[in-house]
Image 1: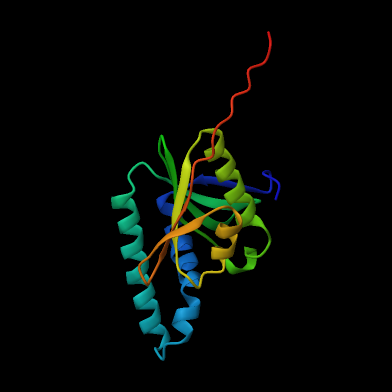
Image 2 (image 1 turned 45 degrees about the horizontal axis):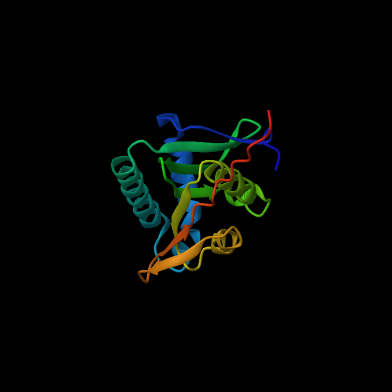
Length: 167
């Protein structure tokens, strides 16, 4: 994934319709198992999106709420909270047509490389059935807690090595 192909930009209120659609794609598997009519599904997904969005805005002040773009097209979201000691990956998602192309892998590796340069640990929550779980495990995340709904994963800070060079 070349950085010129995919980039992040700050989320704006104009992105809310896209984010609502994206949210629906992340719940498609669950929704397919329900015998609800389309109007009920849409109402439920709207309520759930609003609850999630409000929660993130209220509980992660200072986070970077970004839209993932490719060639000017919104293709996903990346919500990250960078602190002096830790990177919290709050939420990431890509539209279905963009999944499986290495975009998520490239972004995670960029974020972890930045965390490593600054000696930051990294953490996230993921559902056990999420295909991204394998991506996180491949990149050094380990499960530190399982509450039955989400796995809390953490990747320790890597030691920052400073090499003194002769003058």
